[in-house]
Figure 1 (cartoon, rainbow, N blue to C red):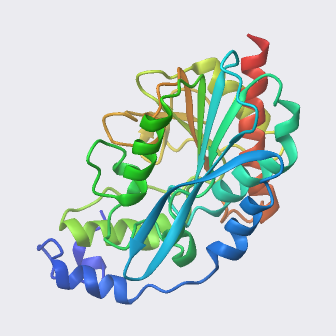
Figure 2: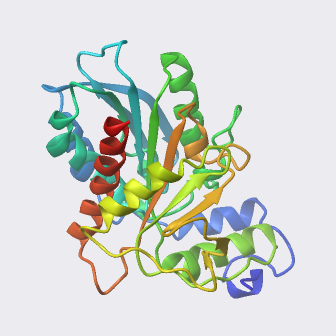
Amino acid sequence: MNTSSDYSIGEPGHPWGPDDKSAWLSLQSAKRSYQVLVESRISSLHDRFHVECYAELHYPSGHYKLYAVSSQDWNPELPSVLITGGVHGYETSGVMGALHFLEQEYESYAETFNFLALPCVSPWAFETINRWNPLTIDPNRSFVADSPAQEALAVVQYLERRGLSFLAHFDLHETTDTDNSEFRPALAARDAKAQDHWEIPDGFYTVADTSRPCREFQEAIITSVAKVTHIAPSIDGRIIGETLQQPGVICYDGIGLGLCMGVSNAPYVTTTEVYPDSPLVTEQDCIAAQVSAITGGLDYLLSK
């Protein structure tokens, strides 16, 4: 178990108050640039895509524009695909994978699908390499109406304004060693509630939505990604504590938990999970895995 006593902030047995949250925020600092690494690449897409700022985040620690990149000639006769990255800002390959797909792979599918991509949902967390936003809220438990997380609320409201129906949604994530060394201990301390401990799986896996598991869709993604990196083995039939549903795949209740993968009405939904801390992979391997997950899923949809 991870407990509140494992963390330097807060009093064991007591949930964090405003002072504790301020103490946590004071320890955070920018370690990379959203403008340089993300905004500049999105700006370069203007000639090929429709790019818009769908919201702005205003925090005392910084102001950020959020961008949506979509097919320039949106065809209402074609099925539409949603791609989200950077819901957890520290999960780097999700952001870079979404951008790489738009830059390098989009044209192969442009005549068959409409695409809407939100490459970096949580820019402050991207810069500070965090799971939470500055208010110690996890955006990926906050995709609900009246969300307490600005990042999630902006996505929910934007999708409502667009009024789109999606065939598929790819939500690009990572599982890192810091999930156990930093983020789960911080969660235990913030809520004064012990957290189950699990081993971080070495390899790629997906999380399907319990209400729409799409077994063949998940299998196609796993098969595609296996060509560029290894798939996570189960430990006693589980991955991150959840029962394995099929090789490399577990399930969560995306809608009930307020996860990003629950935000769309798509019948085909997946959350990808890359493991960047494996000694067997490079940063480029992780990005390639995210792109392969998207293309593998799209190729499956094309085969139906």
